[in-house]
Amino acid sequence: MPLPKAELHVHIEGTLEPELAFALASRNGVRLPYAGTEELRRAYDFSDLQSFLDLYYGLTNALHTVDDFAELAEAYLARAAEQGVRHAEIFFDPQAHTARGVSLGTVVEGLARALDHSEERHGISTRLIMCFLRDLPAASALATLEDAKPYLHRISAVGLDSAEAGHPPSDFREVYAAAEALGLRKVAHAGEEGPPAYIREALDVLGVERIDHGLRAMEDPELVARLVRDRVPLTVCPLSNVRLRAVDTLADHPLPAMMEAGLLVTVNSDDPAYFGGYVGDTFDAVRDTLGLGPERLRELARNSFEASFLDDDEERRARYLAEVEAYAFD
Ligand code: HPA
Ligand SMILES: [Zn+2]
Image (cartoon, rainbow, N blue to C red; front, side, top):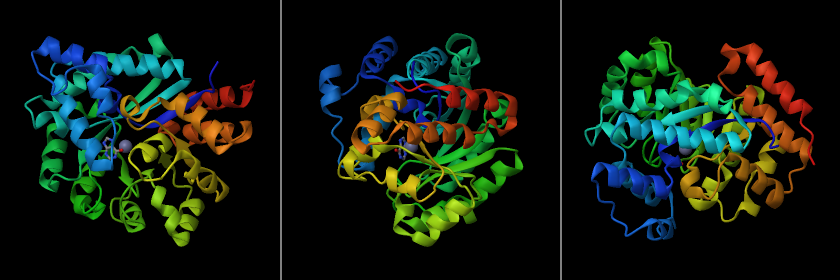
């Protein structure tokens, strides 16, 4: 039995496995620019975040209907359950779909259909986080928030993702203020490729409660001290950082140093269909390569529930935390 954990940083579009991409493309009469799944997998050789995003947005062309999004989410939840996930806070990128004529309602209704059955089928509680693409204008993010108004009962939070360099969080001040006014919680990707200053902006200008990635905080000791003091969670994605070359190899990953510094870090998969593993695989990889022992792994699992939005359901959180404490490593 795998260690019980929450996953707080997973893009649902990044769980689209090649087999499902081709099956959906065929069903929808869409031609993908690859001969087959093997050729597609060979293209997963990324030089940086942008080279990944180009392929990732390209493959979303396979997704069209409510059924497609339901199937995508259902496949993720089934995989996640096998890997010990008990709670998942799932990102989606509405602008990646609305830009090609698929409505936000189609996306949310499809995802919600799978999420509605998640507890009973997979034993996983869920939340949805709607991300804005930071390489599109803030006006597009504002229009997306407006578009989302009929679906806010399904959406817990807003996030900020896509190409980071040159797209500071402060560009999205207005849209985050509007999201907060609508009762949404706030997170943002920062410090994946962008500088520590972007992490500060996400906290100070956008008022986020969690930083997604946050890797480059380690360049700024004062910022680290602040993140430790304020217990700001960082949703770290080690396999993603290797594949997108934020670190040279997994053995070089600062995760142990981050834990040593007292940061509230969690371990997540980001885009598991592309980066070589789901979240349980990621726990196994950091155990094997970074030498994290059982108590460090238990700490990561504990952190994942502590950093989650389950502060709106403390009874459930206490149950999950008890499972973590009772877990026997073999
Ligand atoms: O790793 C990522 N970083 C930024 N945006 C993304 N969108 C999907 N995955 C990512
Ligand atoms: Zn991400």
